[in-house]
Length: 145
Length: 145
DNA sequence: AAAGTTGTAATGATTTATATTTCAACTTTC
DNA sequence: GAAAGTTGAAATATAAATCATTACAACTTT
View 1: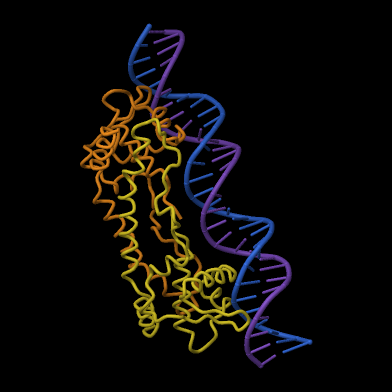
View 2 (view 1 turned 90 degrees about the horizontal axis):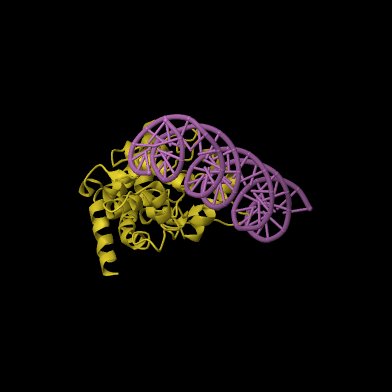
């Protein structure tokens, strides 16, 4: 199992918008070139980031912009925006446990709370990381190249 | 994205072995009935649990047994046993970032450590939960039904 | 020897992820 | 206002992953 690569793609996109946005229009075509991801997928990711209030895009004009400070965007916001994990949760329960078996009819409720806690631990860690630090590190590396 | 259901299936299996193991042979056929999961899949999961030193099974004789105390089996052990997440890690990087782009050639190393930390947060939570508690809760619920 | 079980390989069905094609709607520039 | 470039979005294709199923050899117990 692996998280959709739209997540790292989205972080890459946002980093590019900040790094290049002042000098040029950061179009889906440009982002496709930088990420190696198909331009239509880029537009889909941008649409999700837009729905989440993270970027602004407009038909025709071209070029995405951030709609918040990097400090106010956490990896969790990006993770939610691109729907890495749906309402069903991170863990996938086998669907047909046997209700006539005492274990089968109870295992779900016994595990549910604990699995939610595990997912929450991961999400809390994502909340602790901001795009500001990602971009700062990136710029530092670039300036030393 | 969701974790393979082999994980919850494995926990279900281990719970059944403990709950029913003293009164009967817990065969893959029986476990298939309780979980609603195909018997061959059950045998595959049992094979993985066996490789991890968690259960004992033998050709012919039938019936799986635990090879450790429930207290010494954490959800992390089960998660590793059934290979929920492979060596690539929980997060899947888009594969072809452009090395000619300053962001493209650095984003991976900027994110890697942080993504590992996120994964580790999840895994640490899994390590904190033992099968002993899962089985205890299950038995408590059953006894009150 | 018979019956039941595990181990495992091979195949199929379903779902999901990503890429691709296509085109209408929009903006800017000439 | 026409041309060029861009976004938004639907439809389709390809590839990979997941789970189920079939089949059968190896093994154990009776």
